[in-house]
Amino acid sequence: MMRRMLSLLFVVGGMAAGCATDEAALDDSTVAEGEALDPDSLEERRWGGRPHPGGGAMDGGIVPDAGRPVHFASAKLAPKSGNTTLGGKAVFAKRRGKVQLTLWVEGAPPGKHGAHLHAVGDCSAPDAASAGGHWNPTQAPHGAPSTPSHLGDLGNITIGRSGRGLLTFENPAWTLGDGAPTDVLNHAIVIHADPDDLTSQPSGNAGGRIGCGVVEAD
Image 1 (cartoon, helix red, strand yellow):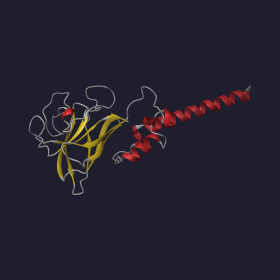
Image 2 (cartoon, rainbow, N blue to C red):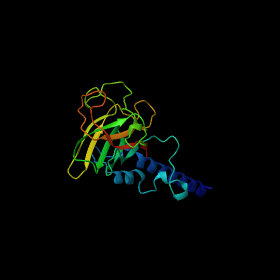
Image 3 (tube, rainbow, N blue to C red):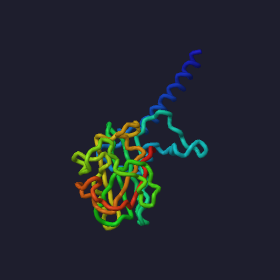
């Protein structure tokens, strides 16, 4: 009887340790303060080398527990409005109660380009008009991110001669995966042809929409 009880305790303890490992893999505190968020290393850290849950049961994917909080979301950028080369990715990561955006763009014309989150998570139109206007649940005026502005105002991303650019951004009002009006999920991130002048209403006179992607939970 004692041997059977010890075996049972060993099995239960092993299961508990496994659960702790899974939770640690999804803990947003594993992203170090100030660390650059590379998309590939982010996925590897998140799932610890295991198959991505998006794979499904048929190909060995692991389906997360129902109700698990969202810690990561992303949007893959596609070219729009006649641009044929723009690509990149936006990654949203929740850590220490805040949501941080890291935006990579490639294949874009050099210079500054307005970047915004738009209200509708739909990039299907050739000119990305299907994404609607700026995401602005608080009905604030358009402006620079550090002033009263839309929740979707990201300012400008600077593209170098290589066609690549990087923007990191954090808005303390953002949430991720809670379904609130401040939730970044299911909105579109749009790259514009021109710089955002951060003043003109309602959208900064940033020109056409040359890149678009929909923010979805990972």
